[in-house]
Length: 72
Image 1 (cartoon, rainbow, N blue to C red):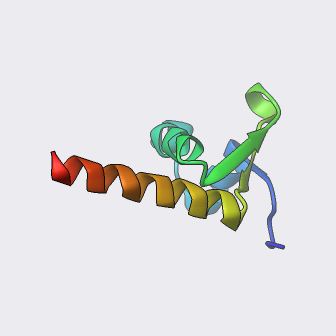
Image 2 (tube, rainbow, N blue to C red):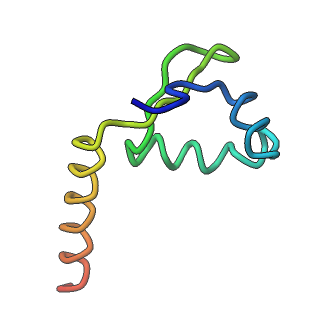
């Protein structure tokens, strides 16, 4: 378990000293990479660290695509 399991964007900004605009793209990238997951909608959206299993699965898939690109 983590100390802060699920945080809203406002809480993350307060911890990091950033703005919502600063974190919009990194959060989208992390969600796409399945490194984090979210629940809720709009202002009630909370972000959680993804399970290690999901992150490892995504990393393995990404490595395979990189190898295939190198061969082409």
